[in-house]
Amino acid sequence: MAQIRENRVKAKLQRGEIATLLMGDNSSPNTVDAQGPLGFDSVLIEGEHGPVDFGDIPNLTRACDLWGMTSVVRVNVNQPGVIYRTLDVGAQGVMVPHINTKEEAQAVVEATKFAPIGARGMSNGRQGHGVAEYVHQANDHTFVTILIEDIVAIDNLAEIVTVDHIDVFYVAPGDLAQSMGLTGQTSHPDVLAAVDRGIATIVDSGRIAGMLVSDSTVDDYLAKGVRYVGIPWTGWLNAGAKSFLDGIASRAG
Image (cartoon, rainbow, N blue to C red; front, top):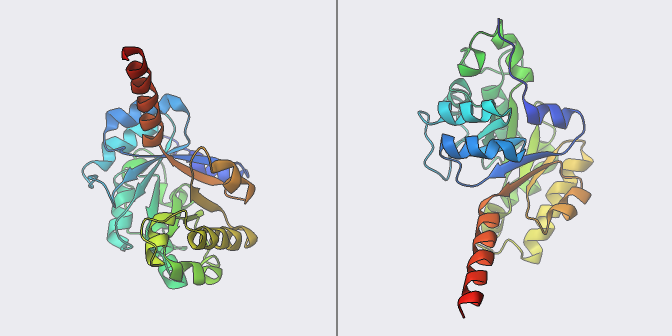
C-alpha cells in the first residue's frame, strides 16, 4: 500500500521551523509545476478571489505533490461541504476566510477533521488513493488555516485561539483595514497596530501566527513571532520587469 504524503508545512511547523507560502495567480498546473524548484513549502490555490473551482483542484494539487509542496486552497466560504469537498479532490490544506468567533473556528475544525475530532464527510479522496486506513491518518496530515481579517476577529481573538486543531491563525491586513473603515490603507498606523495586536495574541497563546509579508517586512514579522509567511510572486515579477525595461530605456536614450 502507498504511504500518505507528508504535509511539508505541518511537519516544519511541528518542528518549530518557519514555513513559506507562495501566493499569486497559481491557477495553472503548469505554473505551479514550474514553481516547484524554487523551494517554497506551500502554494496558495485561490478559490476565493480567483477562477479556481473544484474541477481545477485535482491537477493543481497534483502539481504541488510532484514537488512535495503543500497545496493550500483558500475556499470562499466557511461551509462544511465546500471545505471537505476541497480536501476530497486533493488539497492537503485549506485556508478559510473571515473567521470572527470561536464558534466559527470550531466549525472549520468540524469540517476538516474526521471523527472523533470533527465530522468531515467520509471519503478517502484523492490524497487517500492506495493509502491503508486513510481516514484514520488524515487528521494528522491535513493543514488547517483560518484568516483573521476583520476587526471583530481581532477583538475576539483571545477566545478564537482556544480552539484546538487549527494549525495557523493567519492575519490578513487588506480586509482588516476595510473592516476598520480604512479601505486600501494597509499601512495606516491603526491597521498596523491591529495587526500587531492580533499577532501578539496568537503568539502569546502558544499558537502559530501567519502573515502576508514582503521583502521589506518579513524580518519584522518574523521577529514578532510569525512562523508562516505568505508572499505573492507578482511583486518580484513587477520589480524585475521594471528594472529590465528601465535598463532598456536608459540605453535607448
